[in-house]
Image (cartoon, rainbow, N blue to C red; front, side, top):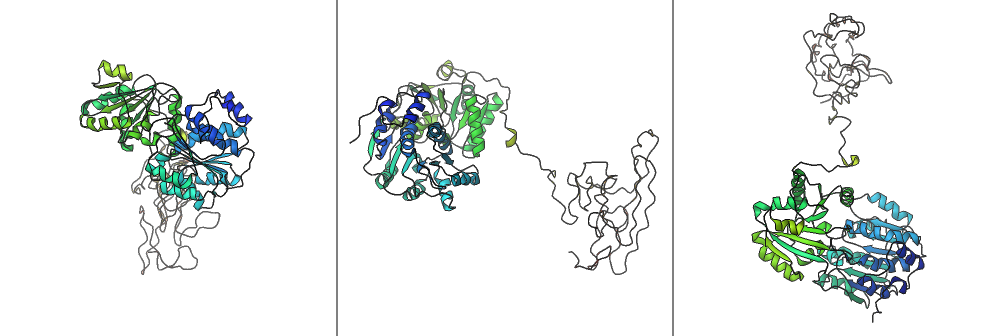
Length: 573
């Protein structure tokens, strides 16, 4: 038999530290689900609680969990209390709600979920945490890596159990709870209880006390519901006008692609919008939620991934741009507004072919509609129900933090030349000699910041005048590459000497190839002409001809003999 409900927190046998923290946070009167479940859960009873989204379920299980764990210390990798939730957003919300109370009691909390560094989470668990908030998939990964064990858990909680079953987590949840030692306390909270959840109840809860403060298809008296029928050609305009209203709102769509497409449309119309869906990384999702909380984003376009676990104070409008397919999805979407006694509205846009299905869904959810009418973009009824107004039409951009913007590669996107090695940091100093790539390193390949190598100059090229000599001073044509040299990647004056095909001495420039003479260089300051290059060495009778002046191709390997001396090695193919 369950205990009578409590009318105030100070009537409950709570730790004095928790009572003071509640009072400091202005929480003095429990919500119905809290008043009903706390007297039993504080005594260690297994509890099955049903309450709508936003009814205060987090403290319903959080307070007894912290009260009964206070004063204990967890070993590394072995938490003492476990909270399983279906989504990352809900995991973060539960952590944020419990952390102020846990810190006052000296308890450590850890949150493990996908989309963030698992290495960091392993480190947190290794240091030890009494309370673990987790999504099933990531927790299973950590257990498989021997980074976490549940053999010390004495209190376990399943929040939004029906949603975990809908998402296919039931086998993982069953496997995780099977690792919890028997005899501990189990609490299960959900907005709806169906057959899948009953399987968990029958297997893991012992003589549970059931508390239901909302009927299965309950709605909230402070929430109004409206169905607006729109034509296909008007839907975009109606959506933009509603999003341009004063104040924040959440708009739900059916797919990730639809969310991105709607955001693009709203930004072009002048509405500060952002998308939230499963295709975003966790840092991106956190950033979007923070921008929505602070008002940088006024229209949050989301898929059902956001229908659980998001709490935004003062949100008074939810719009179903795409109607949900199930009654409980409608209830969870609408649960983002009219939370904790506040007022709010839920508006559903319905195309002509969706009218029958949406009518069935409303009857199944037990929804009493206040408005059901056909609207056009400029109608007064649309503005009356939603606050819609004409958007500015001036495209806007929502800023993205610098750490999330892609950084250009230091190599300018070029891949290093496999045959010639890596060129130097092209373009970083001086002017490359004519006919060379813009890279200035000692490798025979292209410079890293260069484009394609330019053709070698075979005709005289007028050089820029030397400093202080006036326009009449011109530099003669650059000398062609010496025989046996690569002719590519030549450095600017003052940079490293080019590779010439010979062996490179340690710590110094490449030695010239056998039979090749190095051509003197003209300097920009002197304005003197370069001396003529030495004649190319004649080609060997049994080998390929030496490269001609202006050639860009390196001479192929000749019978395995290394140019410039040294031991022979097999020729490259």
